[in-house]
Length: 111
Image 1: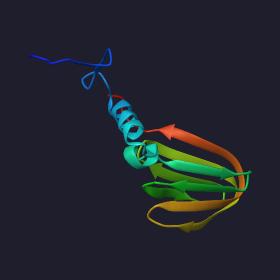
Image 2 (image 1 turned 60 degrees about the vertical axis):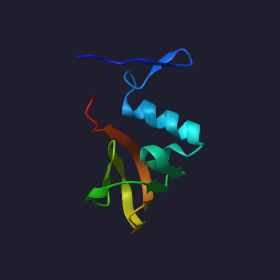
Image 3 (image 1 turned 120 degrees about the horizontal axis):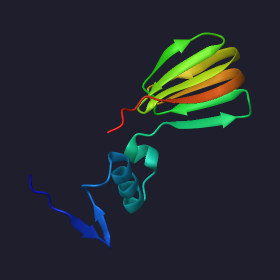
């Protein structure tokens, strides 16, 4: 198998970069937010009583003590008391209540 290597500003590019690195470079070069270019999930926490999650795939579990949300890179797990999904759209959701933990569970396969 024959490979071609390209040097860019003294660094090899393309063949040795994973998708995340390529996406970051594109976002930087185009002056665009990483969440738009890479499809990254955006999590905004307000105190211990409100969490907004943008760019998610779906809600996988929902009780008063646990909310699990599927994202492109894995899952987000919220635990607490009296948790409520105030609203959800295709793009964003809002969870309120007494937030005790916020956990990111990596579900991405290593390439």
